[in-house]
Each structure stands twice: as C-alpha cells, then as structure tokens.
Image (cartoon, rainbow, N blue to C red; front, side, top):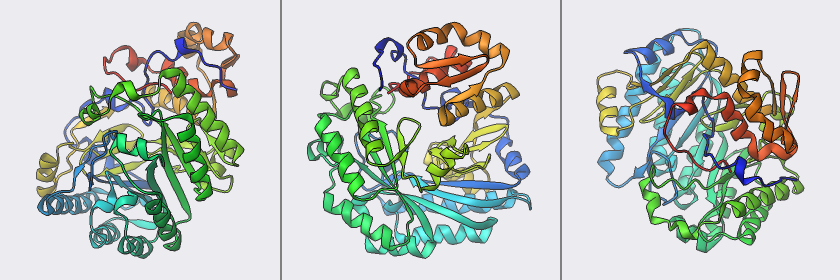
Amino acid sequence: MWPYHPDLLETPVPRYTSYPTAADFGSLPTGSLARAVNEASGDISLYLHIPFCETICFYCGCNTSAAGRTERVQSYLTALHQEIVAVGRELGPDPKVRRIAFGGGSPNAIAPREFLALVDALHAHLPLTSPDLSIEIDPRTFSRDWAQAIEDAGVCRASLGVQTFAAHCQKAIGREQSEALIARSVDWLRQSGVRSLNFDLMYGLPHQTMADLMDSLARTSNYGADRIALFGYAHVPHIVKRQRVIDAATLPGRETRFAMAKAGFDALISSGYQAIGFDHFAKPQDPMAIAAREGALRRNFQGFTEDTSDILIGLGASAISVFPELIAQNEKNTGRYRMHCSQGALSASEGIVRSREDAMRGQMIEGLLCHGEIDLTPCLFSQIEARLRPFKERGLATLDGLTLRIAPEGLPYARVIAAMLDPYREKTTRRFSSAI
C-alpha cells in the first residue's frame, strides 16, 4: 500500500508537534508568559515535567537526568511547587483546568507521596474542574505503592515506555526490562482504574529485525493496549550526545525502516486498531479514535490528542506552554529554573510570538497531519504547487482546486508535505530526524 520513494524522503523534517517548531524559538519579551497566563480563558490543559529517570536510556532525546542524589530531586520538586503557586497567582478567574499530564523523564522516578503532593498542590492553587489525569510510566521502577498513588489521584490514562520486547534490542538501547515487569505494570494500572493505556513502541532500533518488531506488536496487542505509538527511532547524536553509545552501523537502513513502518501499520490495522496519522493507533472505542472519526483530532507537544483546548501551560524545567499567540519554553537548566521559581517568577525566556500568518499555517499543518486534507489559500497554492508535483504524479497527494489531500498511499510522506507550508525551514540550519 505504501510505495517507497527515497528521493522524497531525503530531507529530514520536524514532527510538527507545534508550529512554529522549537527549532525556531528565540528570545521572548520580558513578561510574555505571565501576560499570556493572566489573559487565559476557557478550558486549559497542564503539563508537568519530571526530568528524572532511575536509569538513562541511550536512545532518549528527552530533557532528563538520573534521579541520583535525593537533594537534587527535592530541590527541583520545591521549585515545581513554587511554580504552581506562581501560575495560580497569575491566572485570571475564568480558566478551567480540564486535563493534566505528567511526563518526563519518568514521573515514577519520584516517590508516590511526592506525586500525590503535587496533585494536592494543583488542587489547592489552580482552578481544576474534574480534570482527566494522565501519566507516563517506566515499568522498571513501577511499584504497588505507585499503583495506589495513581488510584488515589484518579489517573485515568497512562503510557508505558515499552519500546521493544526484544532483549537484544533492549540491551543495545540501555533499556533492559523483562516482560514480567511489563505484564505486572499492566495489571496494576488496570486495577488502579486506568481506562486508556498506551504502549510506546519503536522501529529502526539497533539490531532490530522485522521479526522483532512483529513480535513486539503482537505482544502489545495481546496485552490489550488501548493506544499504541509506533515511532521511528531518531538517531541524532549531534544533538543527543548520549546516543553516541549506539553504533550507527547496527541501525536498519532507510529502506528497511520504511518497510518496518509499513509492516507495523498493516499489522495493527489487521489487529483491529484505527490509524491515527501513520504512527499512532487506537482501539475504535478509545476517545482518540472517536475524535479522529469526528474530525476533532488535534496535535500538540504530546503528539496526537483528543484535547481540544488551545491553551497548554507547561510546568517544570524545559516545559513548553502554548497559547494562540505565544509559545514559551521554561528555562532548560534546572539550576536557573530553580532560581526563577524561588523568586516567585515564571522562568520562560525563549519561545516565539505567533503572528497571524504563523497561526494560519499552524492550523493548516495540523489539519493536514490530523485529517489528511486542507483548503489552501491562493497564495499558499502558488507557493507550493511546483513542489507538490512529484507527490501528485506518484499518487501520494491530490489537488482539487485549492483542496490538498494526502492519499492513503501518501501517509508516510505527510510530514514532508506539511513542511512545504513551513517557511521557517528555509531559514534554519538545524538538522532534524528522518521523515520516517
């Protein structure tokens, strides 16, 4: 179903979990984030970043470090509590927090009681309105106490960092975890009231074969995952220095990566999952699948989502906040982040003020990735028509008047086509990961 055209996949492109992307951030005017928070209204979502893991995996590109010293974790959590108070002070009377996501790193790198203290602080200082809570979990450090904390907090969605069940691939990426650990985590999460369970999986890993991938997908389906994110491993050691441990010679080639993505897509569709884009999947009754069918699917820094809010407030070092006219990133350095929080200030100094043009192009990129079609303006049509020609000639996309559609065969080329709408790509020299 997916034809392989390597010439159309040569240029690495962003994942477009925001527009403009983080590669295009610069300095923000002083007080930009505080003003945006103060003016926020309606339903809003929160993301809390826990930048710690018990063990750092070689492949990981997240802003995280080993939990290590108790004092460092404690000082970070103190700063996070201070930031919660500061955001609560800046918010006006109208907003209602409907969704809260805990990510990392690994949120379960901190103690269960520390997690519950954060939840209590959110309830005490922010306008929570029966929010849905979600959390990312590392099976290697998940415990009964953590499962009880998830139940006590009312978490309804969880994501397990599985990546692969193949032991030799786990060893190569520094994430060794037995299937027994994963099975135990699934049982505990279900018993704790988690209704929607996601498995994060990867293709294109070192030493990974097609058989390894198919086996991991089959096991994931057998465990009853409600959602599956099947990502291509992004080998960017020039950006993520810990990836230098991984020998590039052991990685599948581009054609094999493409075949893995295609085979994974076909296998999950055959297992009854609904495709969300080309690398996410959900059971038909899952809220994300329903949103996709109803045309309500969105895309933000957590990937595809059914979250319809236009406002996401990020808490924690390096967390990103999104508003209709602003994207702001908190201080990445945890020491400087703690300093800002200790002074009762919000730490974001980088990001981008979005113009009307940015907002329009962002909506089109999101619409193309989420729904597979958009209506171009005459100006945009004239800008990209020539570059679209190879995709049209090979049956990957169609133009009907000003309506641009991605054909089913063109799904793996969606990000490449979306990048045509992004003028920032002509200006930045940053290198991105493979388009598939």
